[in-house]
Length: 398
Image 1 (cartoon, one colour):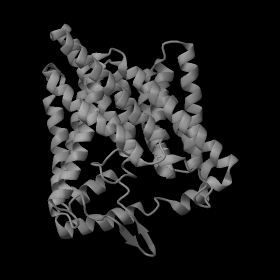
Image 2 (cartoon, one colour; image 1 turned 90 degrees about the vertical axis):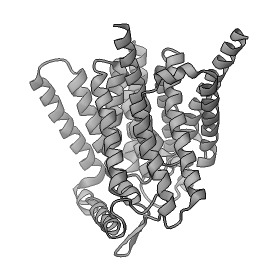
Image 3 (cartoon, one colour; image 1 turned 135 degrees about the vertical axis):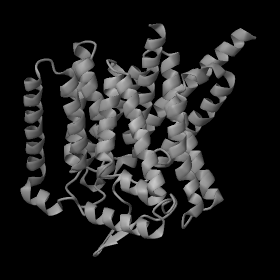
């Protein structure tokens, strides 16, 4: 009976791993969000079954991290009750989204615990899935002009990444993964493959014409220089300065000075100021509720959301929601500082730096079913959980 029970747990782990991989594959390669959501439902169900069958997994859960995550997402879900378009049904829907997010994050952790090296295969799978996506998108855009949904000289990725900003931010996160594998590759073939993938992904990022992604890539690259580049502090400062020049040159080459000056911040300050003022006048403490409409009209233009995860969290959750988000990010940073001298810690830090930087300029609801927020914000949190667990395991052994 015990042997049967152990085999059943192993089978569920394998099925859970397949669904986690399918979630990533569908994100980059599926035609729409409904297809992408399908494997996340299986992740949620398998995760719950696994917890019932194997209670020993609870010991790998950092209760403070879980409380911070559940507190943030739970509060935002409950805020549906005072939303303009909310209610009990809407609250239950958002709490279901919370369950899917938590299930996905801890599934990655439990799979790493069960199968040593899972995170490495997961990273490589994500890199390859994104590379296939960007390669097909570039081919479709230039081989079939009718594929372009709008008459703009920008890359529109196929499937659910057809928004240039969404595709740029998503591919940008995978550039960070590829950069890590380029530095930490086990052999020359791994480094060459990761380098080729980086070239393809960066080409896609450039062709989207999205600018905010470069701030995140710069933050991650500067951290990699500080951590990985051998030599004196002067050498690292010189490398950082050269990187800043290179990124500035790329931006000027892509957009030109006139375009950069014309688009400047793309009305971000006006959007932020308008939504902040609206929230302060309605309910500065609790916010408008996550189901409320955050669209904003400025002059003759209408913007669908806040274009900043921090402003949007303040709009939906007020001061309480924003402080909960900032506290949770700070908690993750503290866990990474505690997990010093770990390969996965360095990767998680690069990913988190990228995410919190680009989401300063883009993003809407942090509590949502699977979309690019999962890739840009929640995937780094999954790596934080893995890094923290590895650190606790090392401390237990020592």
